[in-house]
Amino acid sequence: MLPNLTANDARVIGCLMEKSVVTPDQYPLTLNALTNACNQKSSRNPVMSLDPGMVQRTAQDLATRHLVRVEESFRSGVQKFRHRFCNTQLADYQFDPAQFAIVCLLLLRGAQTPGELRARSGRLHAFADNAAVEDVLTTLIEWDHNPLVVKLPRTPGRRDAEYMHLFSGPIAADADESRAKAAPAKPRPAAIDVAELAHRVSKLEAEVAELREYIKTRG
Image 1 (cartoon, rainbow, N blue to C red):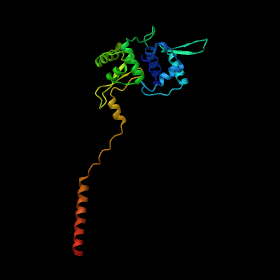
Image 2 (image 1 turned 30 degrees about the horizontal axis):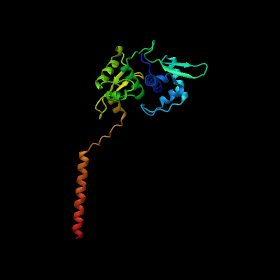
Image 3 (image 1 turned 60 degrees about the vertical axis):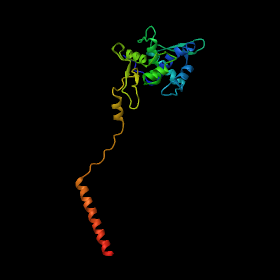
Image 4 (image 1 turned 90 degrees about the horizontal axis):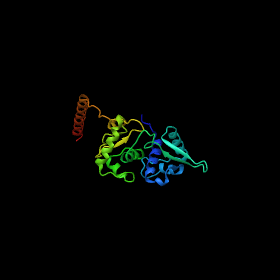
């Protein structure tokens, strides 16, 4: 069963996954470092503004679900956080570096195309081309008969379809249909009553004829 992460859950786990690879000397993260990572203005979508208390509560809640580990120094009282979401001894998910990079990016940035994932993955994993990204996405879609990722319908105006993780719950299969339902309906033009229109034309013609006659008599 997938964990059904909230937006804050996904941000905390994504940040811990990212920093475990790109800044291993600073990992596990202190609360201040984790808060700064969650609120980064780059490499995040959407940009968040979480206060340390919210980050701490989110991490502790994830710890009760065995998705984060909280380490506390009894001497200094400083808490540090590391993810247990994947690639640990008891984790449900064991990802290779390519899979790890894609899951991390989807948690941090939301839906993305293969080209976007490749362009943004450099510090986590180097993909040879977009086809290599698509191959890894396929392994995540076909994950043990329990998809971790879904391919979304292509958005009009975009060349490639986007992919999104399913760790926060199912996504509507037909995004275009969902958007269409959410969009306000366009008003239909009023039907033309032919008989009414003919009546108006006849009335106007009569008024014009009457006006002409009046002009003649006045001339």
